[in-house]
Length: 275
Image (cartoon, rainbow, N blue to C red; front, side, top):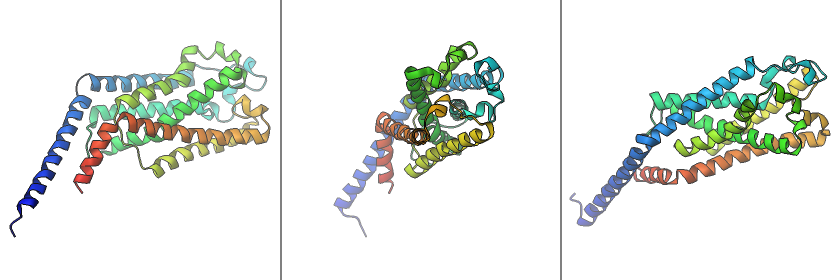
């Protein structure tokens, strides 16, 4: 049956809209995947991956806690070693994330598209959204708030002699700053809310369980603050740690949707057009 003029006009309008959306996406990709913007994204990832990898090496090999720092046994020999600190685990997460992001820059694609993403790119987006961004800000904000209130509760002054200032800022400040820089230079689509929240909360709950395992075998809490708090406030603090990490996740999701709203809007419109 021959199509009416009205149907032909509607079909033509749909095709023109699809072409317009495609043209807009191509314009976004020209600006995003080429030139100065792509070099900046690559620079952020390579510098961050190198920095955090070196930080892990220095933290493990060069930082030694002598006995005079604390009345108990040397800190590094306590059960769990340096892996009991959320700060150290976070640096490992940052090194993994930026290495994966760098691999995607070299071997994958950063194109804004409705097509299925590679495993490498989906992994990059999930690690950033669920772990790298929220845990970095959890560590950074929690550490500096307690540090400014009473540093002996979290980073005793005696540690200044063996834990260099640059390393302190790398693990407690740069983690958040580089996550923010990555947010503004690297387009991503956040995972489903249930997948992201489940991953984030599960990690924090597992860390709290790990803290109790360390306490059981070593006889000491990981952080001096946990030693001085009464049990009710201690568990309120640990619960707050989980809640704050979750809040950082939602902040990251909101900021990402604001920063990349034009691209996300185009993708949503194109998906609707494609049915």
